Length: 270
Image (cartoon, rainbow, N blue to C red; front, side, top):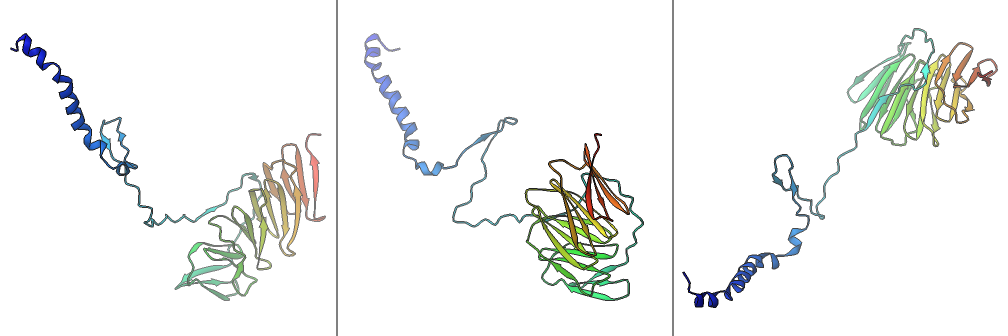
């Protein structure tokens, strides 16, 4: 037990002693390199109350390869309801995959071969009177009226939708439509300018394309195209028949007559 006189002598040294202890404890942090803490952030696990260190960021001088984008091809499905009564369609052409090649066998027995060396086949199918192939380099088509695989103009898009009809097939990207015509063994390129594909159908010698802005009807043997502006209306249903094609909006009907090769507008509110 300290006497009253000794306590008076000891008390002034208490603040000095505490300050010295605090200074010694803070010295490592005061002289540490601040750059060593760059990005050194801790996150608190609110479930287990455990601290976890995030993964270190790669050094800027190191090359980290990017993950390749998956090339996607899907089967296109019409948004407008398709009421077309399609006849029974028999596939009269076939192909088989050989060693670095595809061999198409036409209805008359002719064999048409295509080398796939250096190409990655993303889609291939035969239907009706023609076959198509989509690779990372080419669009290809062959039909019973051709003697070789026909290559289409290709712009290297990564995503496609594919729709096949009896006499024509459509390969649609975000920017363009590629239509294969089996009558002429030709690829037709149609640009999409601020519009999107809504529907596609092929019955006999006519192909119909519906976008968000227009209707396109193509006569396949002559490759003639007929266009109708939708005037900001949407098509909710269409139907292809022997003599005409009907495109239904809410208050209007656009009828394409095969005989006159023209669109007729009918007001459905009368």
